[in-house]
Length: 415
Image (cartoon, rainbow, N blue to C red; front, top):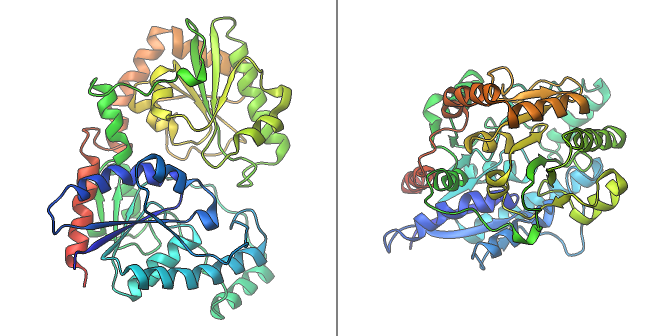
């Protein structure tokens, strides 16, 4: 009986990250690994199943959930999260017993369902590989203190088996192996106490496409559906689900958008703003929420290939999105929004690969500099050379192959 790799897709990014890896495994020897897919859409609603279908993976499983039950871990209250934990615990046991995979492959180890899969897999002798799916906050914002009554209640619920313990930072929640993008994350994990023999640097499978774009091996996707104006310079803004994930109050989230719009408008004619929503954001709902704060002549989109957008853009504006690293990989300048003076998740500005701004007037000036000032552009480009290997890892088109070999090695060692 062939061994099986079970790819767990928490969101559509994971589907895109794992697909080239699965294709390599699929094209291996006849007695190689069988490929199975597990979507967490029934609990997370992050578009994994649609992405799998678009990528040609028509057969996939969804983590079971009682019919008609709704709610996500971040949008519901404590009772919703307890219910999800109870449902997920049963569902994870059922799926792993039915599929009996030889290895679990995940892109996240912080979510409750992913931690349940890793823990239950360990009990069943199923090893797990965590593949870094994007930028990791190496300087996480300290969480607010938890009141003593709440802390005691949580401890009681954990003891009664009604709640998971609080998640540790990324990469520290029990996966047997961790495939990271670059040396910087490997060093950080080791400093956090993760044994070095559990960490491997592979690069990011999705970035194999960046290698192809950089070397002219493959063209970018067509953006004709966006009807971008010809002859205008494209400024790309990569947003995030500020409201859905409770990152900011509504007034502050709206101010971020207003700052970006005013900053690009300050550049004058010949510049076009394209706002690319996070996969977890709803396009029409965001359009209605923004109303007149986002000019109708500019472009608001979501389901468009981010690498093709970056390839076409003159510069990227963002807060903490992984697209900042992806822009740098394509040689595109980045302007980081400094919101509330929060620490950078990784040191873009500190290491000289990005500019930083906190208001619309500064944003206009920063954009002018990175688009038109050759000295600024040259300084940023020189800084990329040392930064990218450490944080993005090798950009040689072989990351998918390296991750595939890690999966094969874990599967060989499983019972």
